Image 1 (cartoon, rainbow, N blue to C red):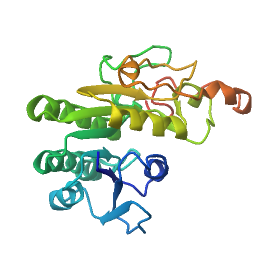
Image 2 (tube, rainbow, N blue to C red; image 1 turned 135 degrees about the horizontal axis):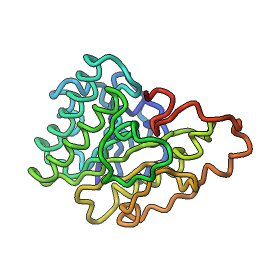
Image 3 (cartoon, rainbow, N blue to C red; image 1 turned 30 degrees about the vertical axis):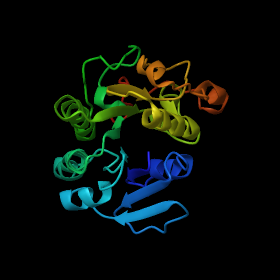
Image 4 (spheres, rainbow, N blue to C red; image 1 turned 90 degrees about the vertical axis):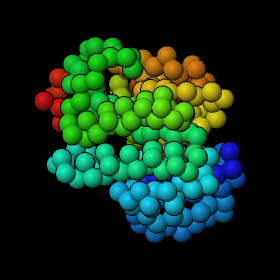
Length: 250
């Protein structure tokens, strides 16, 4: 791989991956709405995924894309439609038009957020999005399936749980994804010899997890962290949520 693109590179996850993925490719290209300073081995593209022209300009010459750019919380339908749905389509279409063969899509646990707490889910569980945000990520997964089947794009959809330096709530003991595990997971998706189309949950190796991902073994992902390490620091209160998506669900 000669050139890797990260969209939404100035965001919370993007900033961690920017550092953690150094060396995966000789050139790391960073796309975001906000101008950024390029470091050694980096290129910066200031652009908007809502524009197919901007997306094509960012993807051109890249071997793989990590697509993070999105409204990261629930919002009214129109902005979700514009950024998370149309923007995601533009990035997939840009990859197809520019001959980029691999895309890692930041999906979310909110695609299954209305499953009740207590169920153990695999990626084959029925979709039960808990918000317009969750619906937009379900759309991205479906789009990834289409672009794999129709155009041969290799796609990994990562249903990210709670990305944080450490778990802060009782729910996080089931959903946490540490920074270093996030870097490892994305890196495994980028470097797997044969990716095909894959949906996995993006979490650390939490013993209280509600989710199972057989696809982890296929790409060689072995999480290093477990939220249980922090269990004594998390307030022991009765959960005020019934659904896996948390307090915002229901």
